[in-house]
Image (cartoon, rainbow, N blue to C red; front, side, top):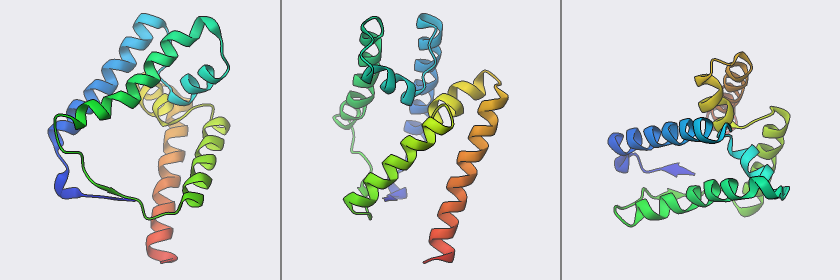
Length: 143
């Protein structure tokens, strides 16, 4: 995957970050829940009737938001350089990692760090460091 940096808009990125923070704050203040996407989706797949409504609304918002945004402006082009099997393996590894780390980037990186959680700081440093190392190895060592 590569990003069209000419289409990068810092104001849209700032607005997106503010909306992520606002939604995470609203969810914890109004529902007492952490906005960790893997936990929200995992709970939705477990079919707990009392928790289904807000989880479904949150996931639906995640899907509809870029579609709505794309109706007002041109979205940056994304070029996928991997085949379907590579994407499937990567997705399974991310899922395994979120299970192993008891949370995902949104849960630890956004919500955990804002609550000054040491566990989330360590998790965020580990998954960011792993990502940096993976990109370095794939682009500069094994290319």
